Image (cartoon, rainbow, N blue to C red; front, side):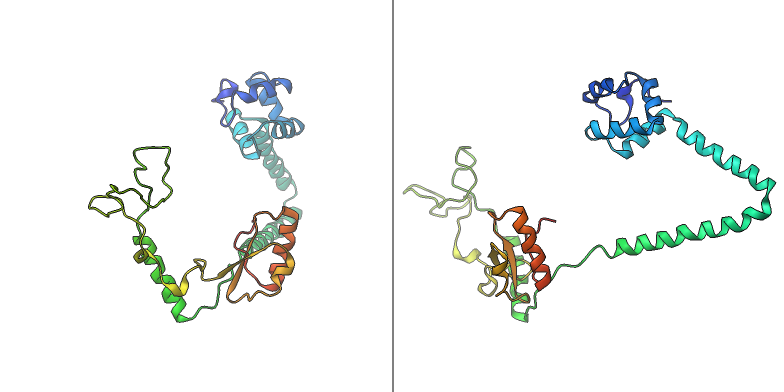
Length: 249
């Protein structure tokens, strides 16, 4: 037993000590007894914030509770029974080994089928080339910041066009921050498209989904739509095969 006080246990904070005192746990010995009781363990998981089954297992490992000792005694009793009756228990052990293997295979198959690839648009060569060019241009594009943003914190970094007859940034002198000009824009063929290549459309109800082409257009649910209505929109979009760009999950 390496932990001498309650705060030595991993994941246990000083805030938890008051809650544990209400449950009758004031020292390490009380904690060791509580970990052996399943009802007390459930109460600790409910009341203590940030404490789950994994942290409880860590506490049991630190305090060496009676749970692992009982687990060690069970195989010894089984060995004695197997020595007394070896012929009857051999056929029972074989099917018991096969059953968990089948279960594990089913679980792996279920977990493998969870991930579903997102819908992608049908793009022609010109739009694909335009998206690739836009990605390169946006990578080379500098960060446009407001004039003298570094001098006055109240101005902020949000872009504002420089003004004033003496502005060196407006006159584009050397060693001055870059100014927004038309040459930094991306290709006109893909302007306004989502990075995936979809054309974005804002939707507020299920009726707006009816006239959408799922091969070229995607949907973004409006920010004023509530959770209950958002779920119905997402379910209807799945039925129609439309991609929702701002899904809740």
